[in-house]
Structure formats: structure tokens, C-alpha cells
Amino acid sequence: MKNPNVLILDEPTNDLDIPTLNALEDFLQDLDVCLLIVSHDRFFMDKLCTKLLVFEGEGKVKEWVGSYTELREVQKRRLTAAKSAAPSKEPVKAAPVEEVKKATGAKLTFNERKELNRIDTEMPKLEKKKEELLAVLAKGGTDHHVMMERSMELEETIKQLDRMTDRWLELSERA
Image (cartoon, rainbow, N blue to C red; front, side):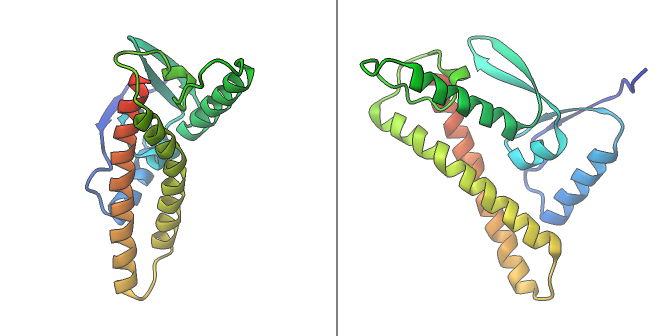
């Protein structure tokens, strides 16, 4: 029988510095419990989560086995396939993820659709920047000023990602 212990973490990476974040990740990877994590930190989720509960709106929740990055790739492929299969006279829907297309409120304005598309292209760039900064910080260095600058740059990148993710979720729910 598997370990019945469950650890629930709500935004565990908020306000953590890099060494503490690395220590938390290492600790949780070695812990023999079921983790329930609520987080906007995609990198953290990719490292620790093997199964996701995806909230699709209208009370629908689906289970996804795999990482968040894999889920996003599948969602983008499905959207691309849906767009290419649609007749050319039909308006193109701007929502970047097919699973959240059903409207739960008012439709998006033209500017909101543009913003959603912009966010969808910028978020992977920020994710990559975050990973690169984490790698630089993990290597360490002798110049503590450079390390401090990279740490502050990482903190700002994480804040941008969090804001962008919140806005993406807000717009996607209405798309």
C-alpha cells in the first residue's frame, strides 16, 4: 500500500530566494508523500508534478498525467489543428487553448484577444529566461554583485510571469 500521507502547498515558491527554493525542491522530491500543489510557478510544477487537475471552466475539471509544459504543448497543437480544420469564413478564435474556449461570460474585445495572443508568445520566453537565470545561479560564482543582480533579475522575471499568468487565466476564462 502506498503512503497515505498528503502534503498541501499553496503557492510554496512565493517570496523564496534561490537557495531556499532549491532546498525546497530537493526536499519535496525526496519526500515520500502525495503532494497537492497550487502554484503559478510553472518551472516548479514541471519539476515536481506528474499529474495535474486542469480547471476548464463551467465546473469542468480534467486530469492530465504529465508536466504542465507537456499539457501546454498538446493544447497548442489541438488549437492549431482546430484552426486549420475550420472553414476560412468562420472567425478565428483567439483563445490559445482549446480546452478553455467555452465562454463563461462576455466575449473578449479585439484588444483583449491581441493581449491574449501576445501573452501566449511572451510567456515561453520568460519561462526560458527564468530557467537560464536559475541555471546561472545554481552554478554559483565568486562575484557576489553579479549573483545578486541575477537573483534580482530572476525575482522580477518570476513576478512578470505571475502577473502574465494571472492575466492569461482571466482572459482565457472569458475567451
